[in-house]
Image 1 (spheres, rainbow, N blue to C red):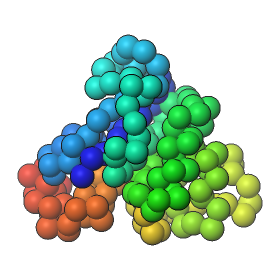
Image 2: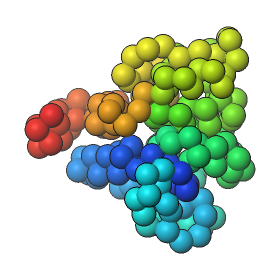
Image 3: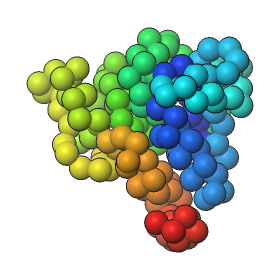
Image 4: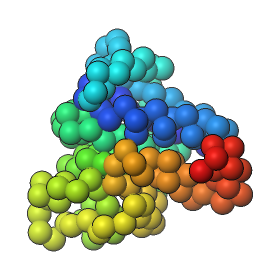
Length: 180
């Protein structure tokens, strides 16, 4: 399974690193793509070095698109034409999409949350219209969409991605190895 994780300045580093590491432990081929050139400075000052710039890859080569949260990082995901088009394309093709924390707002910006069950960071609902509102669960799956609430749910989110996109057995093996 080829997974793509866009990284933007201001992304939530715990979510990004936990998602990337946990999926790689499950054998996923995870590529991180920087929305800006060079090193990304995450929300709490941690520096992340993307595998490649976003503009040097083809999102169509991936099976799964996962967006970490962080408010400033989410704003960058919302404003990035390439990420927005990839989200719309993945949705239209029924490919897996995952979003955690504030990043479901980027899914809304792409027009793919209406009519879906999802969750997000508490307070994120204030940025959404009344007819597009989250439910208060740690991880929510609706079709090919997987969402989660924030840094404290990042392991459960990543493990659910593994269970849904690969197998529950693989997720259980990774969970045991992580002592969760």
